[in-house]
Length: 317
Image (cartoon, rainbow, N blue to C red; front, side):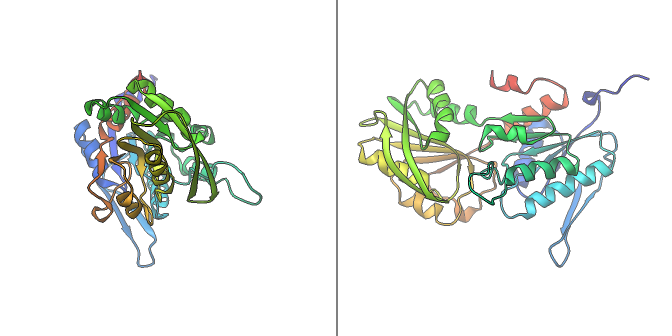
């Protein structure tokens, strides 16, 4: 009996409730309607999921970022389980933002490695593979015991900044952990490179100690994978201004914008903050200098390539 190729099965796109507009954009790019799914909550908040279409033998892609609240990760797990129990041929968890990624090592006694726990839960729920964007640390791919396609938002950002025709640009890494990403941006944009020496006395608190590199009289681009409370980013912007930088642009793949983030960003002297739509940003958290770039075309092509068994890494050649 001949083996059935997954590329010959029907693609089924499924959206959770975490970022429905992104899923609808992906659906439009692929010309593939979203699967009809019932997702509701009981009076106590417990999540109920039911597929309202046939899933048997289909190649299912479940689109759901796992940013707070915790219901989003639970909803993803239940969607995966429901698809597997409905006899899907393959289930791919499309996770534009992977929550709990910052807890990726035991750097002090008696703490959890929560990123590994989340990876285990997704695998145990029945996902066959993961399609994710800009993990907080690249080694998170090794936390999964299933194939992981790790995408990068860099092409989306570099296209945006090329169109702006910035001159005499310096790409600035806000800390040592972001240095590799910043060097990649600098290479693509034919820009200079600088790095900020930062210490973090406690979670969500950052202090700039020094800036290594020439920034005086030059435009600067501060790159990071996420902006949470914006403490690191706004401290970096102020430090660069003190050193005589001209216009300062910032970009981050994931806009969590928690707590005082918006107030801090509005009060800072940055020219523009560019983010992607991996996380749904409520209207009340948006401000004039926030530029939201769509990651939907990139995710749509990655889903299409995965479904047809083509190389996803070719997207970044």
